[in-house]
Length: 238
Image (cartoon, rainbow, N blue to C red; front, side):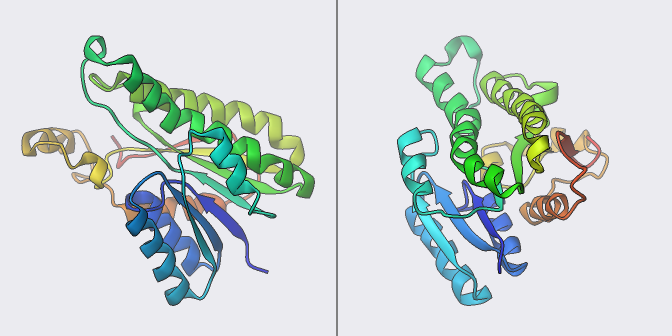
């Protein structure tokens, strides 16, 4: 029987790469995205035809608890939850509208709470499950002009550690993958000078790829069950 995995933010970038790699490894998938409907359903369609696994797509706002609850009404069993949905905001804090602050916290942190809240009853009942929260090294180091994003990812790291302690007796592993610079659309607004400045601080001298991030997710999923409550840096030695 194939394992079932839910991946949020799966229409492109890291989420899409995770979806393809898990499908290649014989997982049935539930895929979500807030927008990019055509891209999300194309990912689902391609996975079904290429890998002969199931891939159900749901266009919804992961920060809407009712929408998340309704989706889980169609998910009777889940082995893996990947909280990948994320969004950045670049700008000075004192110029940031309160609405943008709440949006960044909702997308990067609250959405993980809503997904976990719905996924856990089934995982606890079966005494098994794995949760991976896609975080950022900014959650540990902070980033100028990305205060809200840094705060949300720091919260996600704390969420991960605390939830792992809570779920350990139920044999559910919870870890976070704190990514460094990954070459995705989220970083497409960086100027050539900004890009070069960041690369100078990375010992490997390059950005990571979405495929490499996905491979690290699979590595964590295949790790011994004793790996839990960890925030794992994946940043080229930054």
